[in-house]
Image (cartoon, rainbow, N blue to C red; front, side, top):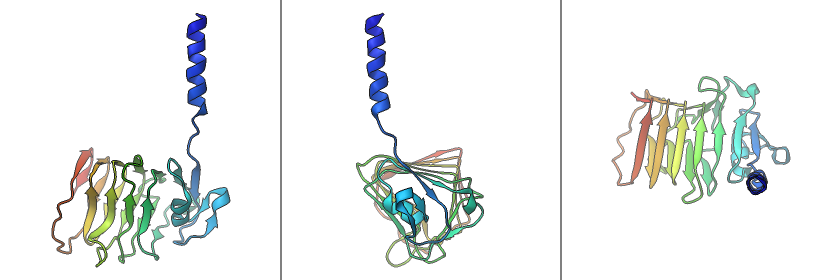
Length: 195
C-alpha cells in the first residue's frame, strides 16, 4: 500500500510540475501591435507575436460580431505551437480585407496547432503568395468548428503536414487560376463540408 501511495505521489508531483501555457486575450478588433504584453491583452497580431509556444489565445466577448479586418498584411506564426479559441464562427471573424493572405504558420518540428470557433474570410491571393487564407508548414494542424469563405485564391495550402478539418465548412471561394504545386500533406475531413 505504501509503495502504491508513493508512486501516486510521484506521478501527481510530476504532473503538477508541468506548467501550462499562458493565456492571451484579444480585446480589440484593430489590426495593430498595440496592447499590454505584460498583461497578455491586445490585438490578435500582438497576442500572436508575443505568445510563447504552448500558449493559448482567446477572444474577449467585446469583440463578438465585429470582424478583425487585416490592414497590415498576413499574420505570421513561426516556431511556436499555439491554440487559438474563438467565441464561435458567427462571433469571431478574421477578415483578410481582400488584400492579402490571412495567416502563415511555419513551425515544423515544434509541436501542434489548433484553431477553433472562428471564421476566416476575404483572403486574397497576391503576387507574394498563392494562398488566400491559410498556409501551413508543420506537423498536426487541427481546425475545429470554423468557416472559410469568400476567398479569392487557394484557400488552404499544406506542406509536410497533417491537416484535420473538423466540423467546419469551406464555401463560396473562387480560384484565380494559380497552378497546382507539388507540396505534400494529408487532409482529414471530419463532419466537414467543402462546397
